[in-house]
Length: 281
Ligand SMILES: Cc1ncc(COP(=O)(O)O)c(C=O)c1O
Image (cartoon, rainbow, N blue to C red; front, side, top):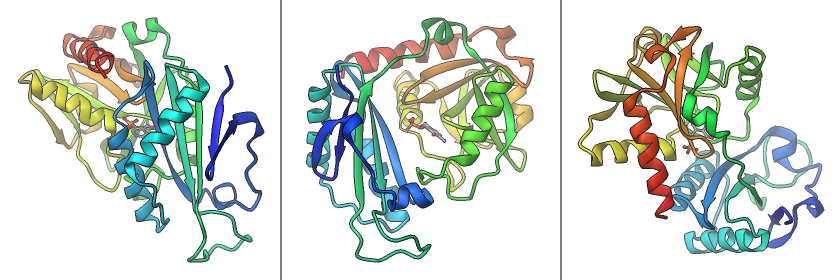
């Protein structure tokens, strides 16, 4: 099956798509993005991703005027053309093409690019047994609420984690836990779920909100809060969430075992509920 791309109004095999060398996404990382997962052909939580994309674009003054129903139609058409029922759609929206100058022409048309690939889920043992993480200083800017293409600190931190043979780096700013390089984080303490407070320093995760909803629907206390590094080490359970990883138990932080190195019951229950939620899409 071919990977499919969509660029500025046209679908084609992904391999045939060429982006201009003057695209500001390429030159400056001047753009925003989203990733949407499709389960059995259905794009999951697409309205939430669409809203976040529109917001991210507006925050950096990119004019993006795709209506929600047209956005949805693009998703479904690309998925159908690719033939992947378990799909991963990246949407890259850049300011557009212009000769290289830091300041940007105000009337420039944005580049709208979608890629449609097969979603390869994490190995089942990883989801069952959990992963290790390390904490790292958050050297990113203070608008991490924007899903910007500028991912250099995330790239370097993720590689640092991989070099340390752990799954994810967890950014820490002023002693507070923020998020993973590609995920949001939750802790469980005395039966209560906590995830770092929403602010300009953290991406508001689509999966994070779904998990809060799932917890609350089951009468569980789940809220946004300050989480210190000590609070992370002393948590009863820790888990990561994100579009591609769903709910992923954490069994070790900076070499300290969490829940005796095994996924905890609250995490496993939410993992199961999330799977049921997406299976009903
Ligand atoms: C920095 C960061 N935080 C959180 C997330 C999780 O967000 P979502 O659940 O919307 O995929 C991601 C996912 O890409 C991310 O890159």
